[in-house]
Image (cartoon, helix red, strand yellow):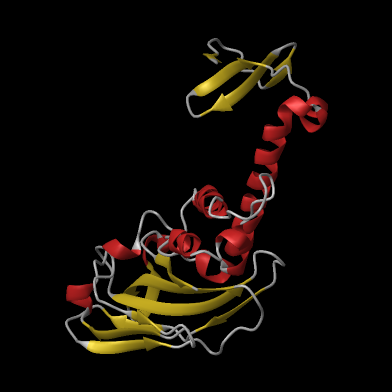
Length: 249
């Protein structure tokens, strides 16, 4: 790979050279000599095909999770969340020890304790992670999805950004089948409280238990607002908001 210098900036392929724009400027590299047809049919590329097949499944599973949690994720995400979710799904796929190589999948990996542990604690916004924002202990009821935060004192138990006057909590109970792609989700009412020294227990109960098969995924959304003249505005367009997978079953 080389960096292109000069007045004329090119993008595209010319002979065996590919010109493209990257983070470091305009770059040029030699075109790969291996054709798509050869990769798809040559026995020498069997491992490549197997890896590609498994990666595709992991990427699809990641998209399914993101789509299922979209209504929450649009309020708390970073610009690399897609690739980070795929990375986690690839790790979970590796816990599938029963499928043959090339057929390992997320659904089977999530049936293991290790697979569930790999997904638990995932933060959709790496600029605001739950462990660095909420310090109060909480519990998750696996049968109802209810999240309880006893004796929460916002000024002591929350690392809130400058300018924030209020904080909101919302929980969700997601049922997702990474084999059939079926999914359903139920949300709790949002609890909005001022950031002050008042101590009170907070309970977030989803409206119901989602139906279907697959894994139970429990999520917690934390949002920050600034109140001006009685109106609350999302703080810095949600840059400090947290969305975390607090439990997987």
